[in-house]
Length: 399
Image 1 (tube, rainbow, N blue to C red):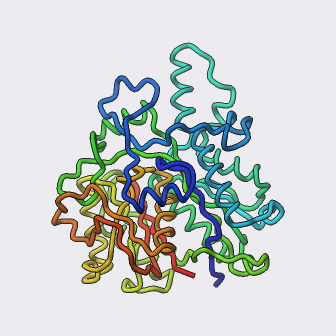
Image 2: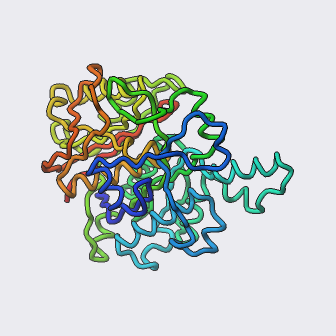
């Protein structure tokens, strides 16, 4: 079976533009959560979010392309551009049917939807490009056009597992010999008044801090951004003289088939086991686990129990942390952002800290370092779990 290498990574997050900005914030435990700054927010009760602030897409991509795309597509474009440049792919190497673009998203062009509906209800004509801008597949089609990719191109919409599933499916296509390389990840930009109001109605938003696995946790903090990888087959890399930064070794995905909101422990457990089996690894091979870690009452307990089932007595020595207190819950982008943090942790030999922990919930019996922890990381696991019980786990290994 063909090995799948990661040759590039790119990110846009509340930490700023670039994978290095994301990693620096995660490594240093620097929260990028701040006051909510969006139009028409006076009706909201929750006033914080992890936004990409001072973002002007026209300075980071061709201005005409920026104007024709929703914010989430702009994020995807910029993250993909960084990943492709790091991979060192020439335009002619990326063009054609042997390449693929798979960008996951939970919602798609939510800013376009929100602004368009507001205009209609105010009696104004919506933007002529409203429909192509709001589509969940807009980022994928945009990137396929920009890079001339004519192979399999589609979007994955699996809520908070979208990015991880996109990366995993891209790896499977490469292994199967259908394609040689892919631009894969996730993008989300749905911090709008209507969206936040909907989350408020579920009573899962924290009014102050995201505190995964803490006894005092009180909900999620919304985030936004994009995390994108370039994946390539080993033989395709060798042909062009490229080296991977790491291997995408394993992918596991399951469905709870249980409830639209409430998670079940069996699905996450089997997704982690599936990813390890796919990578040909045992639990003792994993040196770091990047948790889904939302900071909600039930999710953290379920994830902790699932980790305990998979790793058994190893949980006492397996470092675990969640990046969501740093850059918020990126929803459809979260798996892309978090696999980049996981990769950077492995490349730098540093486990990012679990901030905002305070008193650890005894029901979350995990090893949660609250300071950066230096140690060799040969293999790491990243978890993404979604509403509706869609679970996706990725395993990466060092070169």
